[in-house]
Amino acid sequence: MLETVNGHCDMLDALEHWQQNRIGRAASRPALLAEIMKLGCAIGIRKMARISSRVTESELEHTVNWRFSLDNIRAANDAVVKSMDEMDLPNRYRREAGALHTASDGQKFEVRGESLHASRSFKYFGQGQGVSAYTFVDERHFLWHSLMISAADRESAYVIDGLMHNDVVKSDIHSTDTHGYTEAVFGLTHLLGFSFAPRIKGLGKQRLYLCRGHERGEREDWTIAPVGYVNDALIRENWNDMLRLVATIKLKENTASDIFRRLNSYSRQHALYQTLKAFGQIVKSLFILRYVDDLELRQAIEKQLNKVELANRFTRAVAVGNPREFTQAEKEEQEIAEACNRLIKNSIICWNYLYLARRIEKAEDAAAREALLRMIATHSPMAWAHINMLGEYDFADEKLRDSVGILPLKSAA
Image (cartoon, rainbow, N blue to C red; front, side, top):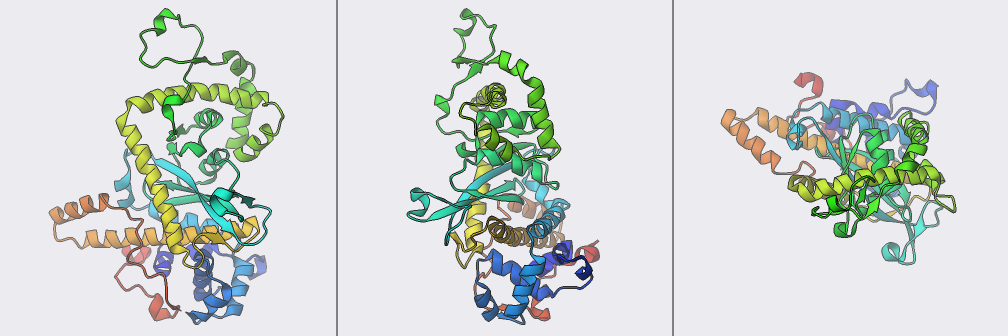
C-alpha cells in the first residue's frame, strides 16, 4: 500500500538527505518504507530488522539519522493529503459543497522513561507520565495535522495552531470537545475567519451575554435570557491591540499557543486576554443560540467528532508494537514517530480511495455506478480490517508491486 500510494504522490521524495551535497543520491526505497513502518508501528529497530527481509539494521540507523526529520515527514504527509484532495470521490463525504468541516481531539499516551515534555496524571497513567497526541481530521477523513503536547496542557491553546499550520486543507468550520473550547478561542477564531463549533458539556449551565442597551421589559418574553453583560468598553479600548495579535498569528510570526501561554503567565489576567474573552463571549452566545435551534448543526458536530474518535482507534491499530505508549523521550522524536503513524494512516486511506475509484470505473452501467457511490457514502474510508498489520515484512520488488490493478497517477491520466 505504501509503495502504491508513493507511485501516485511521490511522498518518499520528501524524505531528503540533511546534507545538500547528498541530495542527488537516491535512498533505498525498502529502507525508507521499513523506517516509516518501524516508527509508525512502534517497533524497535532490532526487531524490525529481524522481521524484515532485504533490510539491515545499519540501513535503518543510517536512514533515520539522515532522512527522517520532522519537516520531511510532515511534507510527506502533505503530499498524500494533497493527492487525495485532487480526487473527486472524497468530496462525497462533504456536508456542504462550499464548506469544509474539520475537528480535533487529543489521545493520551504513556512515555517510557523520564521526559521533560511529559507530565504525570494518575487518572491516565497511574504512577507514570505521558503526553497527548492532538490530531486534526476533516469530513473527508484526511488526517491533515497533528501535535504532541503535554498531557497537563489544555487542548484549547493548540486548536488555532493546527488550523493555521496546514496549507493543503483549509477549514471553514472547526469542532472540538469541551477541552478544546474557551471564550478566548471563540473570539480569536472568529477574527481569523473560522467558524468555531465545539460540543460543550453542560450546555444548560453556560452563561449567555448581552450588549448593554436593551430594556428589562423587552427581555421578559425571551425564551432564553442572557445573564451577563459584555464589557464593550474594554473591547473598544483594546481593539487595535487585538487586531495586532490576530495579524501576528496570520503572518505566522508566532503561534497562538505561545501567545496564550504568555498572556496566562500573569498573576492577574492580562488586559489583552480579557479583551479576547469579552469579544468571545459575544461569539459564544450567538453560537449557543444557534446550536440549540439547529438540529443539523448538532448532528454535524457529533458526526465530525466521531471521526476523530475513529482516527484515535486507527492510531492504536497501526501501532502494533506499543499501541499506548511512546519509547521516545524527546518531544521532536515523539512528533516524528507520531507523524510516521499518521503517514501510514493517510496512505491506507488514500489506497482505499484509489481502490474504490477503480471499482467505480469498472461498474457495468450508470445504475450500478450510482448504487456503488451511495454505498460508499454510507461507509468510512478510514478502514483497516482488510490489512494484516503483523507478520514478516518482505520488501522485495515483486512484493512491493501493486496486485489489485491500481494504475499510477500518470498512467491513469
